[in-house]
Every structure is written in structure tokens, then in C-alpha cells.
Length: 326
Ligand code: PBG
Image (tube, rainbow, N blue to C red; front, side, top):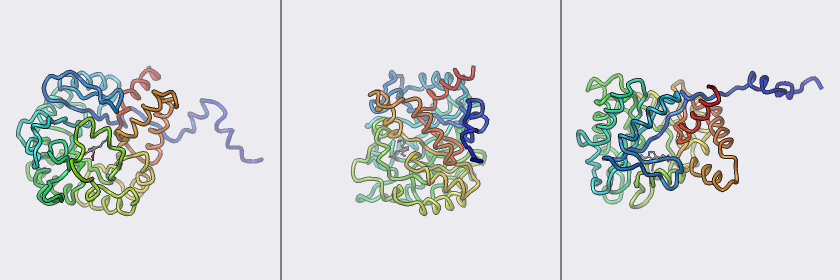
């Protein structure tokens, strides 16, 4: 036998030497759920270890993450039902609690990278990402609202606007809006290939944002399609996106790999709530070794070609990494 691949697996030092994929805390983005007011933090039932929290608690949380080398966050607002309406008006209200919180977070942690959420669903009484008229999602009217949301967020100094709505033309509309208002340094992390997935269930629990009727299939992508992801990719590049996202991650590793090879922009992958919940649930039952499975999942997403991963595992992963390296 001339070739013995096992020689390169002989010892830990050799395995480390030939290791192809490496994750560092700098590659992770931690999603956080923001509550209005001073309320106590509440754990999301379907996401053990993940809390909806007030700004006060979030500032502490961000500080402790920063000490672990975890510096990037995506922040989602939890809106009370009484503030929701058909036009997501609260989302474009100046000084709403989300925008105020973003401002304070950037002021206290200017060295952090803050990604926002732009979509109507957290604020919508219909639980949809666009304006609903006669049971239909109205694309172009929604764009105006998305641009207004993005401008409020850009004004307080966030790093990336994160349109998660999947309306056509939203990246261009937001890019033009930002540039016309002088926010040419604010980036766009676009949810490029966002699928109509059943893996978002726990997130919708966290935000209480499940659609009140129907589903999101007329704007989010069909899980059966990958060519279509290339169309979304081309459009997002033309329209001025800075980072392209694939979401969910685990059932879409092929999409991550194809986009990685097809373009030169950085690729983000969103390891979504349902992917997190499955690992936690099986771990709690003692059916899998939760940490090892977690590490393997994150590696697989990076290996598929993601440059960065949005993941609810970010803090616990970074904590373990910190203890291993210090
Ligand atoms: C909605 C949005 C969703 C997620 C992020 N932004 C849910 C949806 O599209 O219904 C899901 C994230 C997750 O499941 O972790 N704009």
C-alpha cells in the first residue's frame, strides 16, 4: 500500500496540522431578542439557554460576550401585541425602543458589529413580512416601509442593515435610501436565499410573530430550489448587498457551497432556531452529546463555505473556546 491516509490522522498534533476548517469567535454572530422596558429576562421555551431580555440585561450580555471575543450581534425586537398593526407603524416610529436600544448599544460598544433586522413581521398584526391586502403580500408598497426602518437604524450607527423580508427589490431600495441620506458607510447583510422553512418555529415563539394566516411561501423560497438562489444572489450583488446570507444553514449546505463558489462576496449562514432547538432537545434527553454535535454542525456550515455563522450557540461555543485557549 503506497497510500495510507491514516498517517495524517496518527496523532492529535498531526490532525491539527492538516485540519482544513477552523472556527474562531470572530466568525460567529450572536442573535439576541430585545424586550421593551425593564422586564426580567424570560427564557424562550423552545430555545433553552436563549432569553428575551431588556436593554439593561442586553448591555451586560454583550459585555460578557465581548470579553470572550464574540463581537458581532444581530438584534431582533419583541413587540407587544398592542403596538402591532397592518402597516408595522411602530417599526418606523422615530425613537421606538428598538432604535433607541441600537443607539445605546453602539454608543457603549463602538467596537462591536451590530446587525439589525428589517422586515415587517415583528411589528405586523398579520405576522407577515410585507403589507397584506386582501390576503396578498404587496411588494412595492412594502419597500417604502423597509427603507424607512433601515434609515432609522442607520441613523443610530449600526454596522449592517439586515433585510430578512424577501421582498423583490429591497436591497436596491435600501441601498439607494441609505446613500441618498449620506449613510454610505452602513452595509447591507442581505437574507439572499431565505427559504420558507419549518425550522423557524422557535424564533416565531420568541417574537410571537407567527403568520396569522397562510404561510410565507409567496416570498420565501421553495426548499426544493437551488437555481433560484443564484437568481437572488445575482440580484443582491447588482442591488448593492455587502454580505449574502443563506438561511437556514443545515439543510441548505449545498446552497451555501454553491453561492460561495459562484460569487466573491462574503457568505453568511444562519443556523436557525429550529436547528438549535433540535440539538438542545436531544441533548437534554441524553440522546446525543450536545456539545460535540454542536461543534460538528458549526464546522459543517463553515466547511460548506460560510465565512460567518449566525448561531444561537455563539456564546456557549465562545465560552468553551475561551476556556480551551486560556
Ligand atoms: C423574519 C425572520 C425570521 C427569522 C429571522 N427573521 C422568521 C421568519 O421568516 O418567519 C428566523 C430566525 C430563526 O429561526 O432563528 N423576518
